[in-house]
Image (cartoon, rainbow, N blue to C red):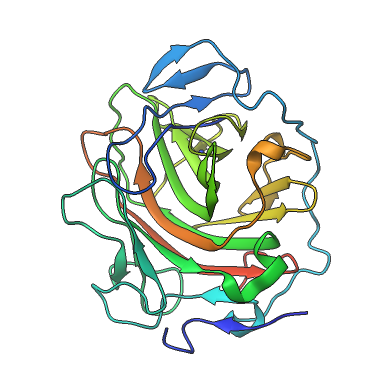
Length: 294
């Protein structure tokens, strides 16, 4: 069952940071590795974040029921083709950060995964603005779905001897004690340039981080996620292969419930000496696995 929300056609990272969701100052940032050593602002401290999570070790899906159509096939689709370069995509609004440098997440023809343009991230050292779209038309699918997005990171990235936590995709929800968003495409970059993926909430209380087995490489990559609000469960895939060490089930602190918006764009919680730049394209949400095809 799909209710199509065709945005273009209608013209319309273990855990991370304590931060302000809308203006003010950024948080301390950090990560929790699979060993449970938490780093805050690049300085290791002792602790285990999200220790109530349970990694399932689930194997990669073979794609049973995977959809393979174009943008019109999905319940929610944004290919960033509508709108003009230098503008916020139609149907989206700015998600304020605390960076006041003037840079914003806007449509751009500088690079793209498909079509003629993509979303270019705001360029800043931290607290960058992102964009947000309501999920009000999706009903229960907003919190129990498969999702996918393509992203590209401009390299080289700045290596400043610190851990840098970045959020790419999050879901907005009503304010709770651990914040007002749940972050499903999230990374923490280590001082050597490797990075992990993680599921994170703003106060660092949840949920799980992978090993530092990945690296930004100036190529387009496909990431997928599966969230299930009924069981508070999460799965994550990188270029078609599951990252099993951030899978979890039955974790209340993940707050996979009442998702009311999707938030896209790059935001840092520490300050690299050279601002990061990234592009995002071909976002889709559906009730079946989407895969990395069209």
